[in-house]
Image (cartoon, rainbow, N blue to C red; front, top):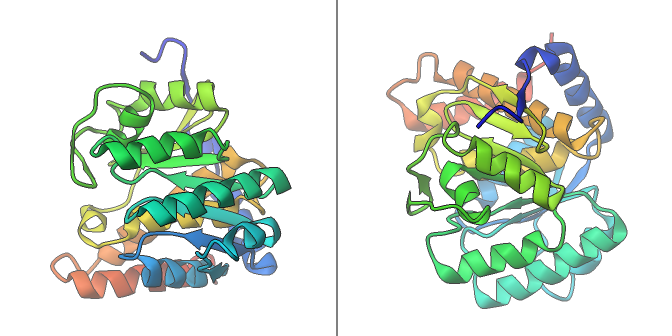
Length: 267
């Protein structure tokens, strides 16, 4: 599988690069337009505020396409999608692409149900800058066989790495593949980002808010590949640090996770 895919060292994206991107984000406070699922809206806003971005949850058809044209970046997450949502998301994605606004697609539970899978493919046709998903989601949208337990992946990120590279190559998007080790790929190279903690899978929103975090870094990082790698790196570090002393306390872990994000890089 990896004969044609160059797996490069995570050291390529050094801690200095990550901290530089974080510093730039806090200086510029990019306006991140979030069309995300109803389960994670509040947590998404808090994560973006913690890293120094400015969140905006604009979802109505009368405003969302226009807002995408003036935002620094856009997130589209199909987690609790409705027919009305699908229409607004497609119009907003088209507006973002037309105006050069970088955007992230999070194809939550793609492959599990036909409606959301079809909408996901329509959104991919609108040319997202980054596609972020777990192994089952990336397998599904790349056209390979996939099984999932609701929104949870039943495959490992290593299992889906070839599919992620194929998806990146065919769409032109960076693919951010989440798992025990995250992989960020442009189709020819892949950056592994290890770390994090199993508790991150037991708090609603840690995957979805990673998509928002990637969106926040798109306007300030040197490349979309670097933006996704930076977001994954700070996420993994914050998750690992937040778990210390909170291994059996999910509520405390969630608060500590926000605290670690907000204090990262501070002396």
